[in-house]
Image (tube, rainbow, N blue to C red; front, side, top):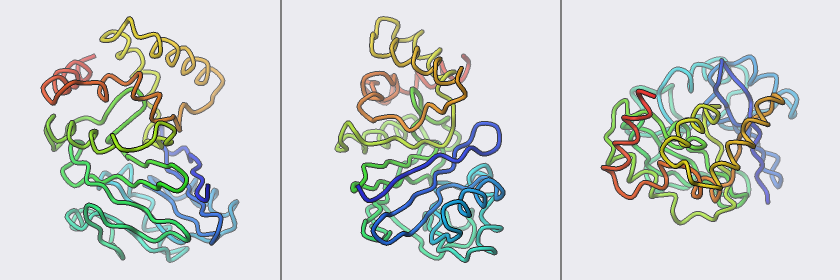
Length: 241
């Protein structure tokens, strides 16, 4: 494994992710909502930032970018199709592109639904999935711009990834997601066990992320939805939960 991902808490419930590539020593940060906690983490890791990866344009994922660019001059990566809503991009990417990050490649995946321009990053060497606000533990993102069909198709793009892939999502929503998930899948023993683990982690002040993709496949009602219609119904129920 050459890439590690560490959660950096931001705002009230956001996570930015600090990525370290062990062969080159390169450092990247994903979706910095604010600069101060990002700078503290970067300085603790050596004080050099090589790259910023952006999943979508919402302020709670990009507002820290200008200060980080001014301080460290990193390369900024984001969706070419959403460049007009993102900070200035140095690398504008498309579906299937591979971004060099030291000794590894970061694969770009179009995952519309939460927004129409949302993308996800996947690093096979290290087994790291960075889905932003597309996939949460035990949930998925609200459909602010896209449709249920968009989100269903986006989540299906993770089907080829190994069960031990680490899901590094953008928010600490797991406890509330667990409460909803138990109402729609109450007999799921894996979900019951995950909900108990989440309760224990949060009581101890610990994050519930990252989580293995295999755990999500067994417990997340949105990943387990049979089709887009079923996912859309779940999303409407969750929105009013």
